[in-house]
Length: 459
Image (cartoon, rainbow, N blue to C red; front, side, top):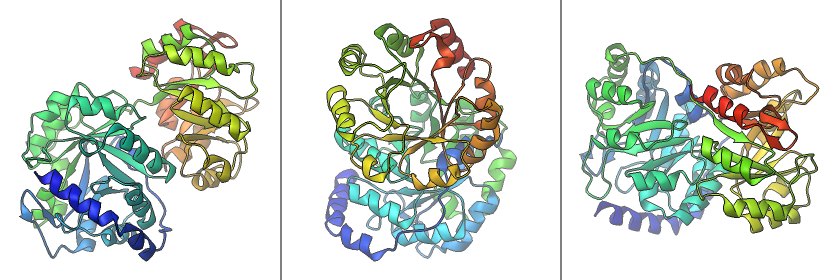
């Protein structure tokens, strides 16, 4: 079986990977967001164009592949992103290819490899990748969560690859933003085109949906678009083409237009203080449920939070919110609640953050002049741009929107039924964080407002 062979090869590679990391200087090339690129509306399905010299299913594709003209052809042809296969043993890839591609284009670069160890992620960060691939087929839940968390902390976006309903369910145990359906069975290396339609219904509305492997005609592209896929990853067809630029342009000239749509953001409801409100969030499909442990009128005692959390279904994703709390207290909350994410609203620095064992959301005051630089500085965290209480919500529509064009962000502050649609359309956030906008009194949610908000976001 192919997977057994390549995983054996990867295990051997990892033995010397630290020496390889030392070989490269950390990349200082500016990052590009794959999520943003695939979320933008171009009227048609996005194409992620791939660099690979060989494939175990088709042998050598183009051994003497010239990176520069290929990337320029992809860019001029209208590709939204670049995928680079770095495996050397079976795909004749190279880590140097990513460094070269990043020097040529500002399109986001996905590093494709069989990642099974944290050091591989460290290497991908060092050479300048914007995103990595995590393959559910080769990872158990514990390893998946470890690698996912490390990638986020390293400032890398994640495309999670699946091949079954069960793998989708496992993947969604983390706050996934992009899921790729691989039509190739990695054991048998056979293409199963029908799997993209079969599995599509199990994909959450909010994720960016990507079809991978075996795409070799415009009709197939149109079919994927009609099913509802946002993007497709194309490798062999483009590599074998004598004119990949023309081939890409033909996709857009011959493929049918799709209706304009915006990516639906994740929704976090914060300030939960009771089980009834928490369960209503679960019932309505709220993605993240927030419990405040900082000084606040909505602060929840730890014992009460534990009582609520133990009753919630496993699918519920939860967030613990802190503001300059002692790090030992943060660790205690994590240990006793097994919360999914931590959200920080104070002046917590890197030394503080690196002691936290969960993915971190870091809040920034969007009215500060240096907010853009601070977001870049804390690239290992999910940025939350918060609007102070004394500022007009109009500020968000240009301050947060300008940063959202460069990388995925969360937004918070004065979000309610009257402005949520404008936030989605103008700021285009990855996630919205709502609290008082769906309350009937402090700490008590108004279920009719909450339901109306979720309905507005989904339509």
